[in-house]
Image (cartoon, rainbow over all chains, first blue to last red; front, side, top):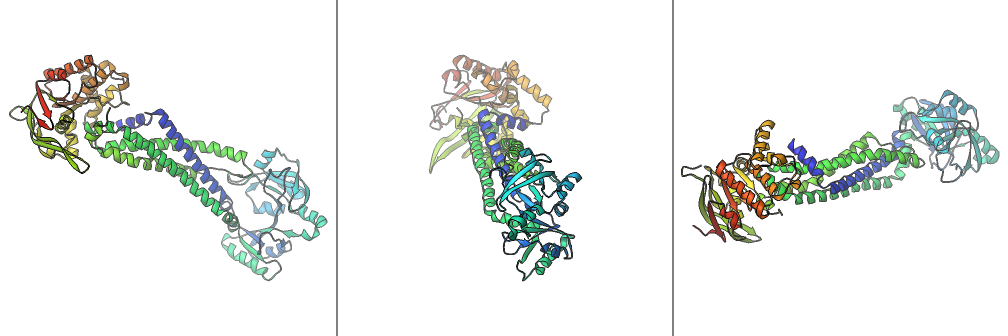
Length: 385
Length: 228
């Protein structure tokens, strides 16, 4: 009981110093948490991908398309439940700054293949029936103030022209991690327009999303699709949605590794700062520790006092950092939704933050604890005055 | 206490410190005894070894050779842990700069040595209040050291020194940081501890007026006792 009291009072003995140290730890832990969340976000597409979905694309590159005629031939392969055509549209809303992902999809197939996008039956019906219909994520709609029935014009970049859409649905994500900033419209609208304007680009698909009945057969089905189109003009490459997403992540893996390293460097820096503060604190109190030893207190009492104080300050900073992470993440998600559609701090990240704070506290106390607990009484008492 | 009435007996005590590669002798072949209930003043110029001798008697430093027997216990043979336990029960300490813990109240400072005993909270309270009564600071028990004058802080330190009812008190320049009036009060208090409570006090001092209060004065010069 005495030790707890002594540790707590010592922790706030130099209020400004303690406040600055706690603030430093809090900022470091907050930065650590945000960077870890950013790294996690990069893999979000991979983690939220379904094991019952395959992606079939042109074997040469994603840049090359596949003929729409492949759709029926893929559907005939055993194990395939649904096939949906999909094109990256790359349209711009008003200015290039207003970036959000937009795709042409086959409404019925897409709604079946992606049950994580939640729409009311009326919205689904409106999307399926309206050639110019579009569904948008809840966050995207909120950002631009779109409502059902609104007309939205996108300027085509890959597919030139002004493209007018009618908002027929605003989807919610089934999970917290579902991206709610996407824009989908009817693939037929794109294709029919292209038939009129650029016929050579019509009936071409960027990727096919393929539903499989049994995830365990996904590899076999993917192989069967690719075998079917072997030696054709457009050979295919089929893979699980997870592998497809991972191929995007792999392109930026070096950046992710750099961010991970920076997140650890932040912790190391605050560890050094905290260790310096604790060393300074212990040095100032050497005479006090010598006095306690004189009165009969043992080395482990002194070690406990120094260690406890260091751990307490670090944990206090850690808790403040964790508490600050949530509102900052919320602001990032709201203000930078075009870059970070989901900026959710996971429980694992929070635990990692607290563990990092504890490691800072323990590490920072090692040298001061050793020094304070091993000081000779006579030497320590000479430091007074 | 031994049969001859001596509570402290030093025999051929030597002590030196290492400064770099050099061995600097501090005490050479010191032998003397202190009787129970005696108030002894150790005097001498700076560097003569007074504080070192006090530290050896108090069990906070170790001899190179020789023996120190206190209350029948040969403390030079004790290990660190045993010595810490022995100190807690048998020696009270008074320092020049009081050495109170700034974050603790007067009450909590006095209670410190009792935390290492098996006394209950109620028993500790009784002891602490009694000790603070002796030094006439019962009404200041909730004050922190920074809220007390130098003389009051030294009285708290004395209360802390006597709270476990040790056989001997060691005091290193107890009046060295005090004004004349406060120093007089502290010396009167120490005298009272000897007269009323039969404590044995060993005090290091530069101050001849402080030494006048002692029953016996010993002089150290370059690590040697100069008065026999």
